[in-house]
Structure formats: C-alpha cells, structure tokens
Amino acid sequence: MRNPRLWMLRAATLSLILMALLSGCAPRPVHAPTVTPTSTAKPTSTPEPTATPEPTATPEPTATPTPTPAPTEAVARRTIDPDGKMVALTFDDGPHSTITRRIANCLEQYGGLGTFFVVGDRVSANSRTLSRVAAAGHQIGSHTWDHKNLNSLSAEGVASQVRRTQAAVRKVIGTAPRILRPPYGSANANSRAVIRDTANLAVVNWSVDSEDWKSRNADAVVREVMKNVKDGDIVLMHDLYTSTAEAVERIVPRLVDEGYQLVTVDELYRLRGDTLKGGSLHFKNPL
Image (cartoon, rainbow, N blue to C red; front, side, top):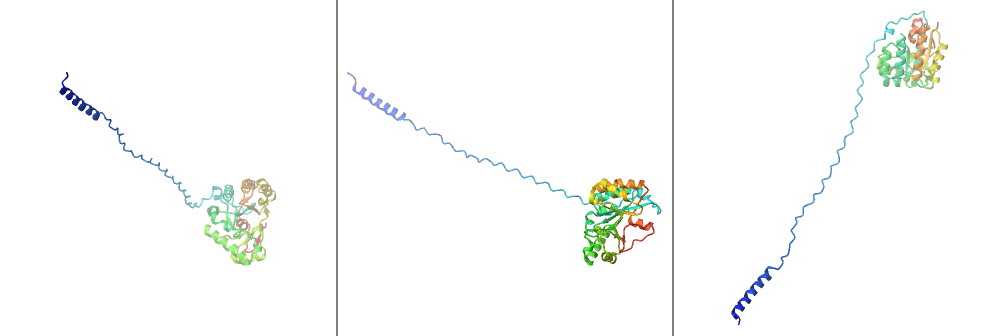
C-alpha cells in the first residue's frame, strides 16, 4: 500500500511546478521598437542663377578735333598763270562728311582748289569736314540756311537765311562767306538787294551745269562737263552724290592735261582783274 503522505507531497509539488510553468510561459506582448521619425528635410531649392547684367554700352569716344592739315605738296607749290586757262569747279548742298572730303582730296592732288557753297543747317553736324576743307585753301560760300527759294520769301526771310548761314560758317572756320549761290539759281532783284544790304555778298551762279543732280551717273557727268567747259567757266556740281565724286576724279586730271588751272571763284575773278560785287549776279568771269 502506498504511503498517502508521500502522494500528497508529490501532488503539492506538481501543483507548484504546474503553476510556475503556467505563469512563466505566458507570451509577452512583443512591442515594435519605437521608431523616432527622422524629419524629412525639405530639399534645398537650387537658387536661381544670378542674372548676368547686360554689358554697359561703351560710349563713343569724344571726338578729338581734327588738326589743321598742312597743304598738300601740290597745293603748297601752286602758282597760277593769270594768262592761262582757268576753270572754277563749284559744289553745292554740302558739306558731306565723306563726299566733300573725297572731292577736296582729288582737287588738291592735282594742285587745284574748288569752291564749296554750304547749306547752313548742315554746317554744325559736319564741322570737321568744313574746317578741313577751308584750312586746305578751298573757298567757302553760302548756299543759304535750309535751301529755300529766296524769291518766295519776305525780305526778313531772305535776310534770316543769309545771317544764320554767315554765323554758322564763321563759328566753325573763323570767317564768313563773301559769296552766295541762291538755291535753284533763283535770286531776283529784290532778293539780291536784301543779300547786299544784309552781308554785301556777291551772288554767283554758273555757266556750265554738270546736271549731276539729274543723271546721278558719273559717265554722264564727265561727258556733260568736258563737252561744254571753256576758259573762265564756273561749273555747277553737288557734293552730295557718290557719282559726282567719281566724276570729279576723272574730270580733274583731264582738265589739267588740257592745260586748265583749277581755281576758286574768288581767284578766277581777282586774277582776271574783275570784281565780285555785293548784290550783283555773276555767272562766269568775262574774258
């Protein structure tokens, strides 16, 4: 027979073991690790490129006054035979910054001088050209202020055209013109009287019209001049057209080859013993 006390002890022991096992085997809740959220940094915006400033426009350099040129060798040794053939080449409507200089250079190359009748309202913008041409010995005449027909103006209008041009030219070259060519060659007795009373200018037209203003063609200009020119003539041209400059570069050496001396209007009259009279109309030097 088994010992009852032993069975009781065993039963108590088993109960304790069973209770311990039951309490020790209960699953513990598995806690997910707390993740500390990493703050997502906002992407740094790429800065817009700094605009490259537009380059500052370089100002045009201040023009240096053109020094007075020395006369060309041909002009410096120039002598005029009063008994020789002469022709006065004259140019209206300038000054022009390139064409006037081109014509003057050609004349000087052959020992000649010309006469430039300038429009007053073109003088200031082309003052360098005017200074250069006058300093070389070419004669400067007036072609009024803005090329109006003098016969259509009042006496005061004519006087204003004369006075303003005289002042503009004097400001640039230091002396005022002594001769005037009226626009279109139009100056009636009343206009000439005002010109005389205002500045005592002689009124000078022409005896040969090159018609360069009409043809605008160098060949035509050369033909027109060479078939008509004679001793003592005053030839009308315009220093506005490239075709005129081209024609002059062909006319000048031909005239020189034919024995002509290229003179100013003033020289033409003075060397032939004639006088340019204020207010009087002149076409050519009487022979």
